[in-house]
Image (cartoon, rainbow, N blue to C red; front, side, top):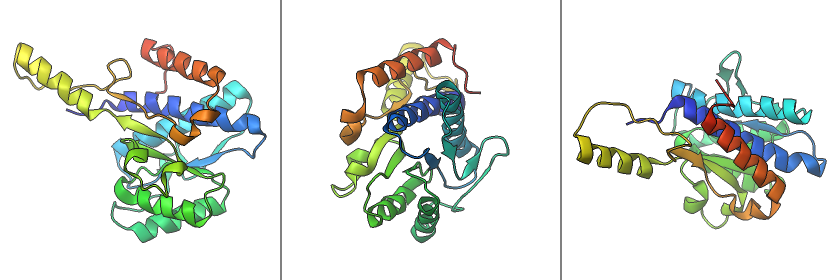
Length: 221
């Protein structure tokens, strides 16, 4: 089983638009955001969706949100080079924060811990993180939960359930399982402490975008 890379991108666009819409009406500086880890294809999918979502939002809202640390066109970005060096990850995060980045999406396994620490060291005001794979809020310590805007989810429990039921019904085969928004194989986590900032209008936009992604009327590449 694996998650479909295309649907990962779709989920990323949904996520990106949400957070941009939330912050822009507050007359804050344009968002600058970043994900990092190791340069591998499946990680690029996260960041491509991130970047394309920003582009879509800028076009729809006549905004000028910037993405730091990843370029969709050139497929170049900032990487730790592995998944164990917390010091390097924190240094990268600090450099991004120095450039004005206010939302960080570290596509880097456990290195999100370094990002959380860097955000906490800056006082956390106006800064947040987007988790990947699972809901980071659930596993973060109490001192860090408030930094989680949301998380990009690979709903592996649903994938496993669907695969087992399919095997029980038809027997085993090697067909690839594609996790999509339609079958709840991917998604985004709740907004937790940010929930009060999600207006009914914004939620309606999210719901509409989700359906457009499922219908195929929105294509993120």
